[in-house]
Length: 303
Image 1 (cartoon, rainbow, N blue to C red):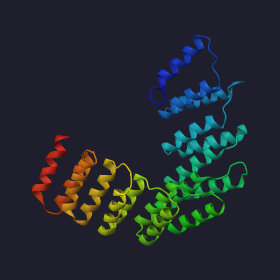
Image 2 (image 1 turned 30 degrees about the horizontal axis):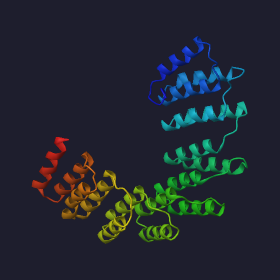
Image 3 (image 1 turned 135 degrees about the horizontal axis):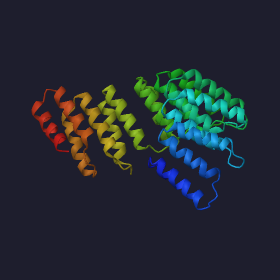
Image 4 (image 1 turned 45 degrees about the horizontal axis):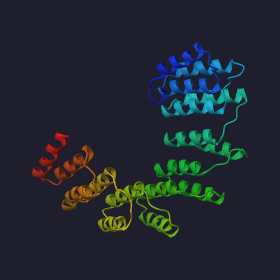
């Protein structure tokens, strides 16, 4: 808990207090302290603890210990340290599990290191004990789709499906977002129909993606259809959703509807935030409506 609160030194003091009071300092305690330091990117101290564990008899690191360090290093794009950790695991005879493979694939994809992502996936598929899952499929699809490689995204999706991996709501959100950003609105509509046919309930993320895509495409009738769909559902809308809606209307120059979103927010019990007013300010400034833009500038200043 101290590690999660970014207080690793207090965690270390507690660790020493355990020793002073005669508590058994086991593998879990060492791993927790290592995790506390790695969360705060104090890698020298985290790696020092790893060495202590490697030199102990009864607290040796396992795949979970290494997975913590791998994840923390990937979060700061320290791929050199990750490579060293993977080599160290091989020397120690510690095999990667599905979680570590998924963490690597996801990080390589986000960093657009596609060669490493694909080689890691191939390596994973060769091992019978590490079967890919929906997380693997989503990470790979997000990587290719997010970089505009729609053909590769679709090929990977089909291969994973043929391997018996079922898509989930996150998978469909990734597909919708990728198609929307590349202007593939027909395929986007096909995914929406598939979700409806097989009863995949939309999340707020889904609504935000769809509204953003249709706003960029200037398809106001599609946005209105989405809003009617929402009215017939029990989904709880939040400020992020309304901000997406404001942005969509603003891009299309629908200024009356843009301002009308504020009334919708009030009815829905959502308060506008700084992002709401910034979007409003930008939309009305571009539209040359200086007096209304000034109004939102004042509201923004008052927050």
